Length: 276
Image 1 (cartoon, rainbow, N blue to C red):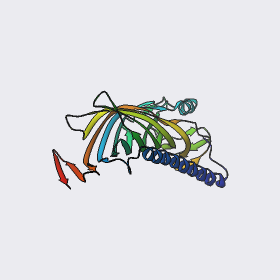
Image 2: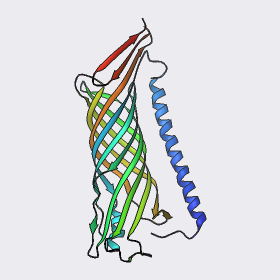
Image 3: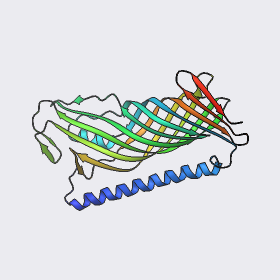
Image 4: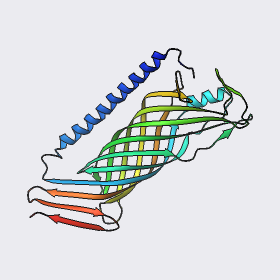
C-alpha cells in the first residue's frame, strides 16, 4: 500500500469510480426495464400477480483475497481466511414472473490469527445488493430464478498488535495498537435461485441460492485515508446457501372480469375480494 502524494488524484479516482458505478447501475436498470416490457407484464396481460415479502438466508461465502494474503505474508503477518459463514436479509417484490430484491448480508465468523510477535490479522465483509430475476417453472412446483444484480461490498481487514508495541507495516510505521485496512468494491452479480413452496401455499418458499460477483472497481482506505496500489481482491466472491422467502402481501387482478384478490399474511391467510 502506498499513500497518494497528489491530492487531486484522490478526487479524480473517486469521481471516476462514482461514474463507473452509475453507468453499471444504469445498465442493470435498462436490462430490468427491457425484460419487463418485452413480456408485457405491466400493460397487455389480462392477469397481474404482485407480491411483497421478506427473505432471509444463510450461506457459505468464499472470497478472492490471494493478493492480499501475499501482501500480509510478505510482511510476516498471518494470512486471512477465504471462507466465511454469511447471514442475509432482504425485501422482495414479485410482479408476475419478475423478481426484484433489495438485500444485505454480513460475514459472521471473524477470527483473529496471531503471528509469533503477537500481531494478529482478522477480516470480514458486508454488502448491499439489488437483484433482478425472472422465474421459470420446472417440474411442477419447482421454480428456477436466474438473476442479475449490483453489489457494493466492504471488506474490512484489521491488523492488531496484541502487546501494543510499535510495529512496521511496509512503508508505514505506527505506534497505534491496530490498523484498519478497508476495501470497497462494486461488483456485478450473476446468480440463480431454485425454489420450492413450503406447504400448499405459493406465499412462502425455500431453496438454494448461488451467486458470484464480478469485480468492476475497487478502492482502499487505511485508517480512513484513501491509499493507492492496494492488492486486487474480489470480496463479493462466491456465495452458496439456503434462502427462505415469505410473501406478506399478494395482490391478484383479472382485467376482463374486474376481479381482484388481496392476501394479507400473518400466521394465516386472509382473502379479500371485490368487484363483479
